[in-house]
Amino acid sequence: MNVGERHYRTIWLSDDKRSVEIIDQRWLPHEFRVERIGSVAGIATAIRDMWVRGAPLIGVTAAYGVAIQMADDPSDAALDAVWETLHKTRPTAINLRWALDEMRRSLKPIAPEQRAEAAYRRAAEIADEDVGLNRAIGENGLKIIKEIAARKKPGEPVNILTHCNAGWLATVDYGTATSPIYLAVEAGIPVHVYVDETRPRNQGAQLTAWEMAGHGVPHTLIVDNAGGHLMQHGEVDMVIVGTDRTTANGDVCNKIGTYLKALAAADNDVPFYVALPSPTIDWTVGDGLAEIPIEERSGDEVSLVWGKTADGRIAQVRVSPEATPAANPAFDVTPARLVTGLITERGVAKASREGLKAMFPERVS
Ligand code: MRU
Image (cartoon, rainbow, N blue to C red; front, side, top):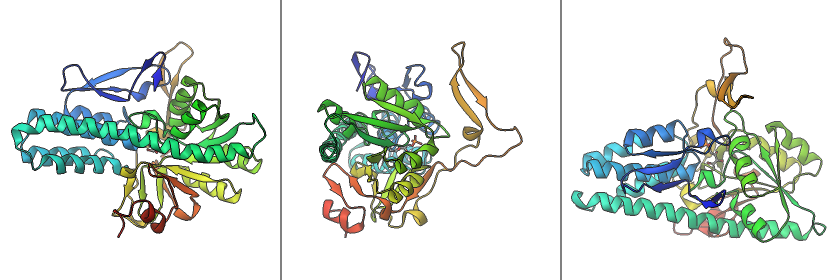
């Protein structure tokens, strides 16, 4: 997507053809900074400390991490070691394991001296594929937005609530949940987006709001607790969120707080959609509540908040007493029964084993 006049992806190969450059998301929306990363340790830090984040982008970044390792040491042992190192960085988003498995699967049969070139090529393909998948999700989600728009008075916007950032910053380009929104704007359909701030790290307030503002999408920032109230008053036509891992049964793991939005949506007959590319489906898992590991992050993310001071510094402030401990489960699981549909690159699937099987017959037995 564009930043100002210039088109950016969230990650690209540097001129040296060895390192990658990423948009360092820790500083948005206040500063747009690009970082060059040329080591596996650097890639691990960027994923763990969320310079890059969002399930698909984590996967692509890890794929480039494998390529960097192959340029240093293309042995089998190094390939297994980089898989382990990067897999440990963030436990919930399944795209990380998917991308690491995909890199190892494609590189293992190749002679070590040819692996570096093949690894950069496969990482670039995974990045390009992500863009294509998200564009297709956008086209499938656009049909739903069009249907809702057709039931509204002419010119009345379709009000869409979203949680966290499942935007282009969470992917290589377009985003998942935002892709139908961008395509709706492109098609001239009036939309308005309620952006959940998404505590504790405020991905909504900092990243989704920045994206919406940057692309002229009418939007309003709300506190996480406002969604239920707005739904009770008919202010939300649909919810679209992303996901970090969806099970073969259709249970959806996403940023903490998603489940509460799904409950409120169900109670108010508001359709609740989840946008996801197929690498986000964990075909090995059925029951999301029992089987998905939920990342527990530092309590400091709850107690301390980043922001821009009146004199222009980006700084952290404490919001709770020093002595108060904080818990920080980063994701929750929304049971399939609360999900209206899964917007995938192939179409909109029912959130169930049968629904996913109909859409991806080659994956479900
Ligand atoms: O902790 P984050 O910011 O990596 O979590 C991201 C989310 O929960 C997104 O909603 C999800 O990854 C979907 S990204 C297309």
